[in-house]
Length: 436
Ligand SMILES: [Fe+2]
Image (tube, rainbow, N blue to C red):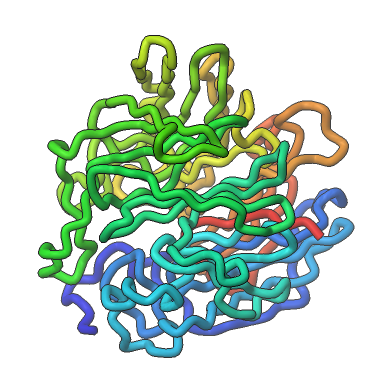
C-alpha cells in the first residue's frame, strides 16, 4: 500500500510505530512504586509493521506491558500480536474485514476467566500469554461466530462479560453474554436500521444500553482508502435499553440528538432513570480532523420515555475510565485524558467528581503526552478513589516513554512514581491492569 505524500498525524511524532520488540529487565524508577501494585499494566495500539496501513485504525496490534511486584517493576516488553494480518503485511485490511481471524488485534487488551484477549472490533479476539506472546485466535470453544467489540464490560457483581458485535452487513448488531467462568451462554440478534460503527456500549446491573448513532458504513465510499464511513444525521440517533438477559423484543428505544460517542465513562440505574455518562462529539469528524469529545450526562427517564442531556465540561476529554468495581453501578469518580486541541493525545489527566461535576487536573507538562490512564484500586482503600492512575506518558525531550503513577485520590501534580522505559511507547488505544 502506498504511503501518502503528506504524513497523517498518526504516523508523526509519538503516533509513529516502533519496529523493535524489546525486553528490559532493569528499569529506572523515580519515586516509590506502591507495594500494593501486583500485576501487569498492558496497553494495546496500532503499530503498522510496514509503516503505513491505510488508516490509523488498521495498524498491526502491539501490546506494551510493565510487570509490577512488591514495589518493584520486573520488566517492560512489547510484542506484536501475530495474527494472519501480521503474517501478510501487504494484505488489504478492508478485504480482511470479511475473514473473522484476520484481525489487526490493535484496540484493547482485557482479561476475563483466566484469559488475556487482544481485541479489535471487526474480528474474533486473539489470546496472548502473560509474557505477551501470541497464543492464538479465540472463539469461546467455537461458539462465537461474529466479531467481538473491543469494549466488552465485565460486571463487578456477577463476573459476567457482556459484549456485542456490529456488522457492515446484516446482522447489524448481535449481543453476547459470557458467564463468569468464560462460557458463551447467550447470543441475540438485535434489530437496528442499518450498519453503523458501534464502537462501545453501556451496561448497568440490569440493562445494556445500545448507542445507535449515525456513523453509517458505506462501502461505496472507499476512494481514498480511508474508513468507509458516512456521517448521516438522517439515520437518526437513539439509545436502546435492553434487559441483560433479554433480547430484541425487549429493547426500548429512545431518540436523542445526532452525535457520536466512541467511549462512555459509565452508566447506572437510579430510581426510574438510567444515567449514562459519555465522551460525546457533535459529529464523528470535524473536516479532516477528529471532532472534539466532551463529557456529557444523559438521563434516560424510563417512565416519560425521554432522554435529557447536559454538558459537564468545556474541555475535551477522551479515554474515560472508572474503577473496575463500579462498572454499571452508582459511582462518583471518572478519569479521562484531556486532549490537546488539534490531536487526539492527552496533555493532562482529569478526574471528574460526578457528585458535583467538579474536577481535578494533573498537567503533564511541555512536550509530554499521555495515553489512556487506568485506575487501579488500592486493596486497602476505603473510598472509591483510593488508588492510583497508571498511564504511559511520552516525553519528547528524551524520545522515550514512562509509566506515570499518580495518586488518584489527591491528583497531586507530584507523581507517586515514574518507571522509565528505555524505548518509545506509541500513543495507542486501550489497556488494562491485570492483577496476578
Ligand atoms: Fe475504544
